[in-house]
Length: 348
Image (cartoon, rainbow, N blue to C red; front, top):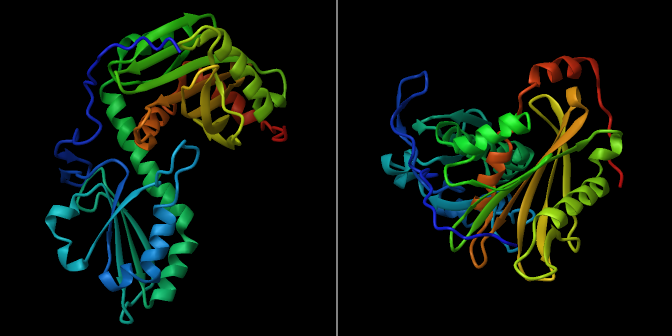
């Protein structure tokens, strides 16, 4: 791609930005720890037996749709005796209590227990077997809880510090807003298409914003969206060599899920992209949202290029950016969304 590399410095630091904050319940310490890190407070014996194995199987399972194996979370286990003030400000914490004397078994989710913005859970069980049972029963909730907390922290940063030029272009010319950090710039703008990117000599993070008419339910099928996306990228994102261009990697299945975004019908897609007739590639996440008031689909396609580097956290940053997508005409959509229940054929 003609990714014109320009050395820029992010004015935004993704970690350590939060100073002592009043979250409504008093003054909190800053959170500490790296993005994607979870502290697990657990005895050595439990960590080396079935409870530890169950925790690793859930929290450290491979992240979906990355070109190399990276865990969903980086886990640091510490014994109960070592869980002192230095660890209590960590951003994500799992506390375990596995004792026959436990009064009430179960799992407790608590925000901002010792710092802000912090996500913690406590799992109480009378035995190893009961711990594994409780953990597995709640594994989806646990993953969703920590992933949502990671995204919320990034979103809070972008709400404070964002590239105003990009924000204004999107609002004025596309009827939407997306908040991206300073350093992103407009690469190409056309009718119904915008390409923005942040780059250094080592990484690219970019977003394509494009729209197309909503004429039928097929607009949200995988095949239709891939066809539209690849035609747009071929026409607008040239590669570094003659005849090369960006498209979707088809040798791996796309991960597609349907959801609501700001109450609008939407779908999320994850997978890999590549440059045809070249060797560039990486992970992507795409959010397609129905703008019922304008009878159009708005797509925010975020990608990462970071050869030889871990990409999980870079992709999560892009994910938080595209999920900041908002329609200027959301009030009109809210009225329509109350009247219409869109059913989409997910086949194809």
